[in-house]
Length: 250
Image 1 (tube, helix red, strand yellow):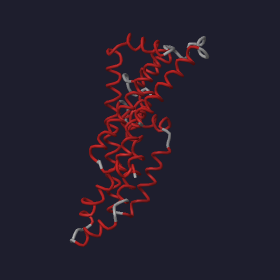
Image 2 (cartoon, one colour; image 1 turned 90 degrees about the vertical axis):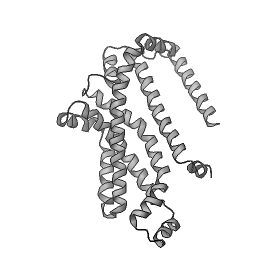
Image 3 (cartoon, one colour; image 1 turned 135 degrees about the vertical axis):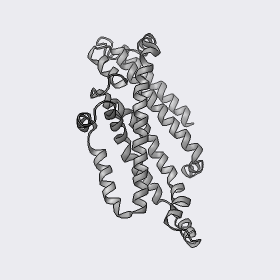
Image 4 (cartoon, one colour; image 1 turned 60 degrees about the horizontal axis):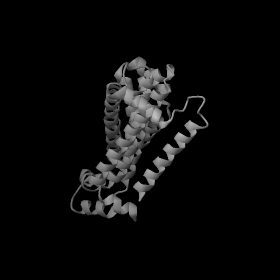
């Protein structure tokens, strides 16, 4: 049912886009119709979209791995050493509150090149995954923890057999949000001029040259990739944590 509702929502959104392009924005040309965007995308073809999407995806994926890996490692460290919680939480909040456009130029000056794109992609996902992992690790059932303790298990045993399993649904919830966020961070990094190829670079050039259909096509491709990333992580979550679906239904 939710899939049908989502499909209906997409159809209505495209219909509204088409209506506005054909009426309100018909003279300005700033909002092309869907057929015009699709024709532009077909004209550019894979030779244009393929290399640019691959460059952005590569940086976003690296940032996704680094940012989420660091977030999960910090969450585990906080669980083992509770005194570090305040410091880790403050760092996470700082990473979330600092605008990427403000920190991006500094990172570009310090590291330069592709490292800036990867860094911004990583910092875009750190906060969400860290909070999700911490909440999940703390949601472990107290009776299960006590059972492990009774059988002689220590802190690492409780972490391995109970807390990590309990943290999986919440962690995957953060990872699903992180997938589009990593792509956004990578595109912002490319906007700063730290790369010569990618969706962000192409968007900036097409805007400067006022290539409206191409700009919309690039934005559409970026949105589709972000949605695909979310869907892939959600599919992995359904396979790894099948019990979470029953809990959500209840």
